[in-house]
Image (cartoon, rainbow, N blue to C red; front, side):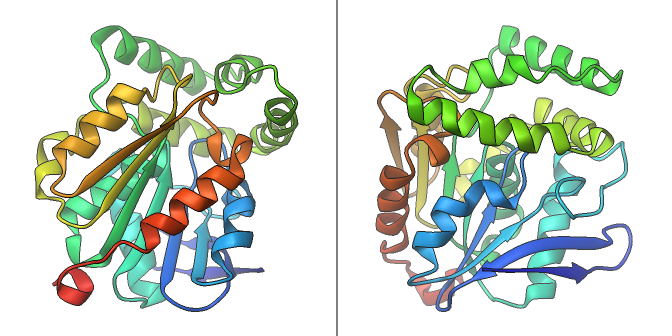
Amino acid sequence: MTSTTLQLSEPYGEVALSVAGSGEPVVLLHGVGMQSAAWEPQIATLAKSHHVIALDMPGHGGSAPLPSSAKLPEFVSWLAAVLDALDLGAVNLAGHSMGALVASGLAVLHPKKVRRLALLNGVFRRSVDARAAVMARANQIREGAFDLETPLARWFGDGVNDQAASAQVAGWLSEVNIDGYATAYSAFACGDAIFADRFGEIACPVLTLTGDGDVNSSPEMSRVMAGAVQNGRAIVLDGHRHMLNLTAPEQVNEILLDWLSLSVSGGDND
């Protein structure tokens, strides 16, 4: 795996990414507070048969932040600019949590850029109470409050695998740029319905995947998303919560390889 950077024109600036393997391209987008390293178990497996590009989201890892006022559409525009710079043609696009919101937005606005779409632990049309809670967290982060333990308790169980992954994620969260984190979390908090009414336009094969213990990216959300697109399949893993690509890497890798084997009509989604 090679770490490298892209230099985009303003307002995007530098983009950090990890690249491995060769073949059909797979682009991976992490969630709020994470970095491309969160995909290491998937990179190791998928790179055996594919060209894998894991991106640091704006304001995370080595990527420059977006303006503090940026919302989900600005993150989608950033991703479109990155893919244009990489010049890969249509890609297989997988996003986790906030990354899933950005990935689905790209599939709606730029369908020819997406060959297949995977939405891991994605959110979709939160309830009124859930939206109020996530907006309150976003406002707290904007005001400088940084709570490490609450998201870890929400994302992980007490098992050995969960606790090992929790320690890893705690390290990434503790290193995050607080301003970039606040901008992304704000976009995440108010982004769950922005493209929801247009999911029916997504024609490429879509995988939605979550854990049965993920309260905020619930199994019901995954099922609704899969039913809203033209060619969707929902999978729910028992005994897992929000970071299932780290707590169930072998299962997730197998599911992603199966997703990558799905036939795509029209060659490049033309």
